[in-house]
Amino acid sequence: MSNPTRYGVNYLPSRDWWYAWVDWDEDVIARDLDVIMGLGFDHVRLQCLWPLFQPNPAYVSPTMLTRLVRLLDLAGERGLSACPTVLDGWLSGFDFRPAWLRDASPFADPEAVEAAARLVTSVAKAVAEHPAVWCLDIANEPNVLMRQARLAPGSGDGWAARMAAAARSGAPGVPVTVGVDHEPWMTGDCALTAETVVDISDLVAIHAWPYFTGALARFGEGERGAWAIPDYLAQVALAVLDGRRKPLWVQEVGVSELWLDRVNVPDFAERMLRRIAAIPEVTAVTWWASHDIDRRLRGFDELEYGLGLIDTDNRVKPVGERVRDVIAELRTRPVPPARTAALELPPGTVPDLEFAAKWFDRVHPDGGPRIVRRTADTPPDLGHRDHADVQG
Image: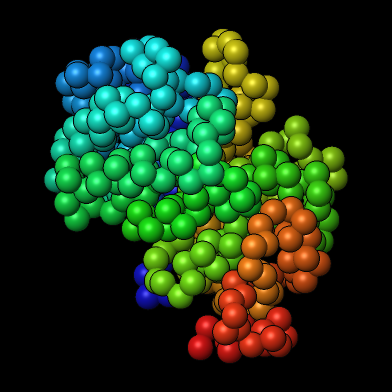
């Protein structure tokens, strides 16, 4: 690759989670960022809790915008670039839609959509010229709320396009993405389609969770196990891109000890990172998350309390030490891309776990097959062609 891969973390403040926007303590945040920097990361993804940033549809909090800019200052002082994620209606298993929505659909009600666009534009304008800003993410896993609302397939595409346009209007030239989870890639009925995700994104985001995708239950922890799910989702995204050149960003990847029986968390994490490093189109990898959640905060699912690389006292955990060492090695000794045969995705086939099983059957230690959509013009022997031949 012409540019080195970025390695970073989804920042969760060690104290008060993202309620820290309210009980603002720069000293705590600065210490957190010092430890993150010390692990060798070069960027952080930030979460702007929607109800705090926009308590009224006609009002965006200037205090929150000021604190966001100050957080960018603190990150930049430590050599960390940042990606603010604006519409966090779904985060760490909680629904954070603002109360003013009442029964209105945030994705279909015209006034609600324009209010959301107002927030996206306001955040974009506030950070547009900041030297630490790397990109803007319009929303965190908005497809989850779309699924809960039982929106029809594709009906969220217009909303996503509107939010991306709002981001670009506020911050021209700043790359834009949308932080979807696995659903657009692995289901055929998502309200936000994979085609729209790649169309509106300058960086194509992938949330590659071994558990939430169902990969751990289906493929386990072994040699051809779920640790390869980031590779699989990257290949699905590349198939949707269909030759268009856009960088891939593994925006969320993580693992909980609650999910594993035979492999420890540091070993599983290392396997995932090494596999991701062999995908040349992936230009950034961002672990979830920087810090554990303090157990005095009640109501989170049990797994959320232990997903960090760092504990709430800013002590680096064994998985954090392993991730630090692996990314340091990958920066000095990049993994060569694997050469593998291609796997056809026939017309009308959804790349769900059934299709994924065919892909995982062909996985080897250095990589999995490239996925290519078959069309009427696709040669019938494509599945036996070499990866390099498919690339052309």
